[in-house]
Length: 289
Image (cartoon, rainbow, N blue to C red):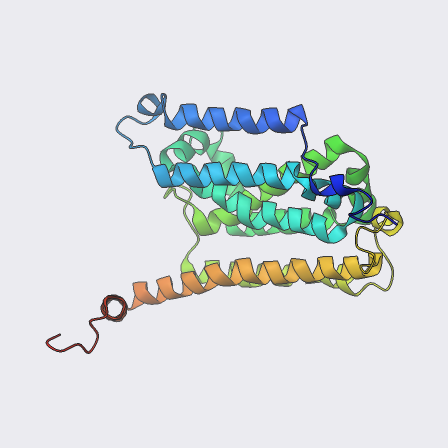
């Protein structure tokens, strides 16, 4: 059985795929040119947003870690749980970093031109993004399709890019920076975030509670951890999917709920914020306050 001691390179081998490295660098260069030398031509007067640029770079860096670090080999050859971590980082973290990292004026250039806008106006509606991401997420977990991606590196990379693309669509109704393609109303956002994990329950249940190993690749793979059987690894993958999903949907759900409350009750929201500031400053209840 394979163990870390028998094959220590598992822990230190990074991908040097020229397509992966070249594509990531090309996107970084294109972004740097757009927000740097070309900014005044594309959006005259727009300032350079350091925070957004930092988020975008962080998203690209994490993308390479997910695709190029030892996590990739573990996910592709040995552990379904590692592959699940890959998919969820792409969908719930990297997609959000890249979406928020692009300044609104650049999104406007990309999406509001005459050819793209009519399509974007339909494809970025909450119902459509919900269906597209949910269907894509479920279809890629069908064993024959999943195994086909594992056997073909090109298909596997395309799969991950599509995960990223559909996840950016998924988060658009929550994070949109454009009034022309606006965020959904607060109530719709809450329903949207509440129902996404519910829609994933069939995939979660099958992976977590199946009495048999679903994916042949992981059933016959050498055991990286002797104590983690293929069936236990599969159950762990399902648990990771549900826990990470709940985490990354619950936090924005709470934020949106309180934003909605403050918008409906501006006086109370202002009082609450003022009290919070006083408490943070240590002045609540102080003499003379």
